[in-house]
Image (cartoon, rainbow, N blue to C red; front, side):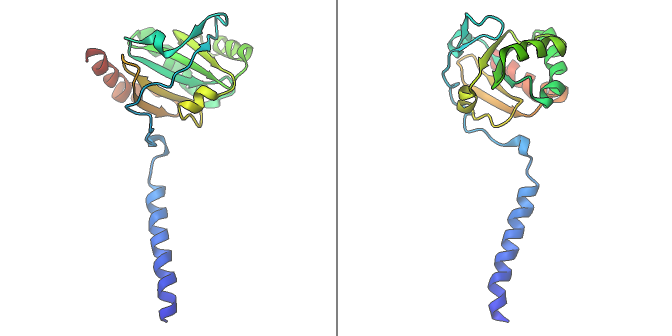
Length: 176
């Protein structure tokens, strides 16, 4: 009887860990980059490939970095929300077109209602996305005036997430 107690205890502990893990929300995975400067990059712009963009160009502004791709099904769901956010002019939206074909990305923007991005950078090989810790698209980062990442949202943005989390945080950062 005693020889079964240790395996039973180990099994119960493992079931406990599994139960806790199943209750976690994968969209709330904390980013180790929160509170740290934006990774440095200089990438060509989607709409103007002869021009480039870097985080230094955005110093002094609170902005969203939205990682997207034409092959991303969830990006279609998020796109109308970004279009509406752009119309409101509450925050600058910068796109990071991730592991995508330039022509496909431009066609996708036209097909799905327009370009909500003030600027889109082309991360064709995905290296900048890796620096940001992106493991799926879409992902969105809130960046303060000093170029520090203040928040990260995994998955498609929704009106509720913008209204209840992103925009209040952005307004506070703009005042600071």
